[in-house]
Image (cartoon, rainbow, N blue to C red; front, side, top):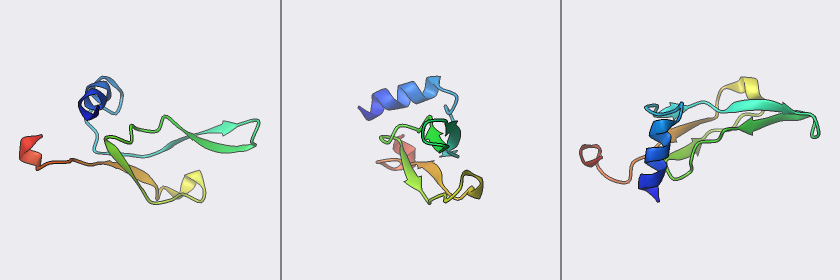
Length: 71
């Protein structure tokens, strides 16, 4: 499952990134900004919290299950 997610990530725009900032889009129905294009939770862990999209505190970090030399 993780290997499949890594292959898919390599094909995406986030390919080689270890840190990804969230992206927001305004939702007309809810009348607020909603996060879109969340990275795969098998590869990235959510860190921090944004009260507003402009806060730039929340981000996603890639994590590895094994030593970096083995990845």
